[in-house]
Length: 498
Image (cartoon, rainbow, N blue to C red; front, side, top):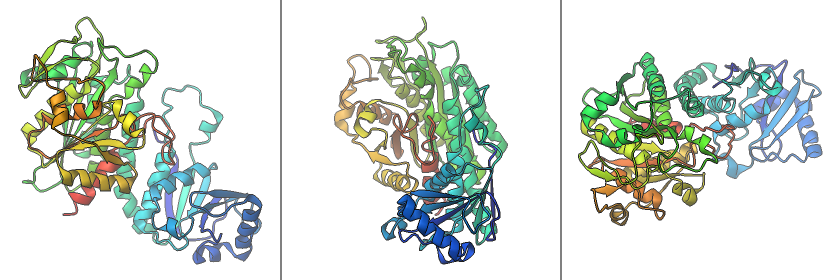
């Protein structure tokens, strides 16, 4: 959850107290405007301190000068932006995270005037988003706060900019993205005894406050629709399954929607094919795909996105109850196709199969993208640096790749062909839910492809990026909220810009 740290924007002026953050290049010189504001003595002080600290002004490096002579501030924090090659590829969101990591007082002022780098109002807004994401922490269930945690609340960071009004306008459109990421992180971080399928559906229902239409399907409704694959996973738990359908109608009335589908296994024991006990507590995060979809719908609705969007999430708990499905069972999906259960721990694809079919059949979307913490195999291939991308449409795959590069939530296209489809053929049913070790991510995607018909579709396997992923400047916690920024950028760039 976010802390009470306040972000403000104001016109350039003299800074009297707190931390002052400025930027320099490899020549250790700030921009002309900042140099004028600081004065020649402070500029000389930066050069002397840099020599003493071996600070070279490289990108993402920083140096602090306590009680700087000639200035009334408590600390002067100098951040490097590097040389000419670094200036062409500045990630302002990551820069915001870097800034937040250097601030430890109650008040800090950032003079976001960079040497030889244009800083637009949108860039300032992105930086502010990065600050908010870096300061996120999930301590809802801690009754005693550490001293360092106590110091986080109640602070204020001021961006000193040329045009505060323009920056505030840009930030207003981006603040919802920040909130969407935080919502996704909160959902993944929640303990599984608190967040079951029904509770998760209630969190999705809260989006109605922003104008999102939300419909919840319970067990009875799903049985009527014939969602035998999803219900097969859910039947081992005393907590019934749910499907939440979220609709944002911000586009033209006759425009087909675009659709996002999320796997929401709120806890995954593996079922009868039970997982090893070590690390099983992490399986509370097996609903990160669904969390992303809820966070994305919040982001789109917050900024009144000019697009028609459907978000659909399948919510179940996979438990080894006496009523749980068994290896060898055959389930009938909503599409009428049958699936032989080889491994009950290959459950996410069963959930997605029914939800994907439901969405393509009911809403006839322009395209569908699903997100799922689907396979450990994707981490063997891509570690935790990229999400695996599988698609039946080259244009959609390329657009996701471009959006990934722009946001830093990178995807890597993986193979999806008839060879993998053949591997999931079953002797007893139309297909089997697991083809074994080899090509595990591709065979899982091949099964999903059988439920999308001819709709342009992409599957994002986020097992390595959504939880326990490497720390970055904007995320120091366990849950990353991965995918919200990526998909918001996709919608913004390619489906609102038309």
